[in-house]
Image 1 (cartoon, helix red, strand yellow):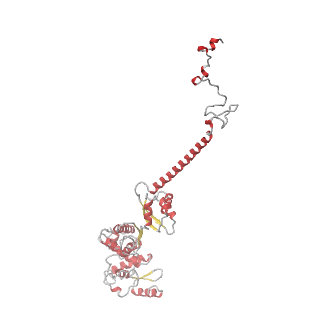
Image 2 (image 1 turned 180 degrees about the horizontal axis):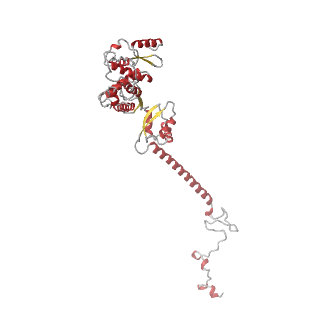
Image 3 (image 1 turned 90 degrees about the vertical axis):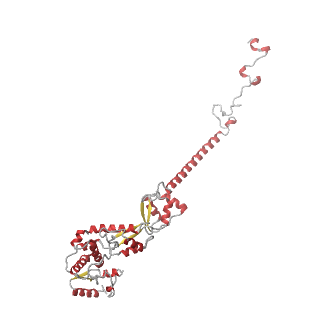
Length: 403
């Protein structure tokens, strides 16, 4: 190389530009591994990165990666827990306070000794509550409900608070049973034994004329015109509504037994008179097989113009049900005393059953005028003459059936 090619201005030697650093200082090429970029790892002679031997940026890289992974796992776990808690709370709130108002009425019966869990399962099955499990969760705060045996009027889709309040109040649905032979006063006494009712109010409703039977629309007393069977007395139910159910059932029972104006006319009676005959049959017959013959005795005596002389009508006048009729009882002044007054009493003396109605409508043929119980199972003997009646009464006394 010539001197001109190697020398710069004023004959100074020049350093190649690519190797000159700031301020014109010459830079020395970096040795392998020395001054490596901050975030590059050192390598072994084969070019494989050696952990921990790189520059300042390579230290702690793996620990930061493990820490980041742990944090992500913790965050995921916490998120899952939060979702579960939110889901459980939402589920409970929806079940404890369901949307919409109460649904249709449901009568639930709790039997004596029934476990609370079984009661809750029944409530869930009948739609009163949505979930027995959710209700049990509320027991953790509220405690298990104390449930008394009986019948409860509830509704579907109730809140847990409403269910607890109604169960705590105790049973509120009661059964009123009208048995064959019962008088209106006896039914009133049973109805009046339940909360919100009294015998006096029941009798007043019966006498008010607000409820009438199709068989006897002119009689407001409703004596003998109540259908037999059991009725549900619901909370807040009025005596008038209950009487309407009872009278409606009797009308249907009487129609099913064949009581029609034409059937009554064939007997020479009105519809109310047939009911009166059936009510006497019900009380006098003791058992079903006696009913037809007792009805025949009544019709035979009516045909002769004789007094019926039925003890049960006297007992009705005295306000008693059963027992021995004394001599003084037979002198009681009442149109229901059939010893003093011939013909039928002014009305029924109790509720006749369907069997008694059928017996009154179609009694067997016979000339009987008297009868008396002669066997302990209630069997009665029917005869034509008074002498035969006295003989049967002595037989009954010897058997200890009548005093």
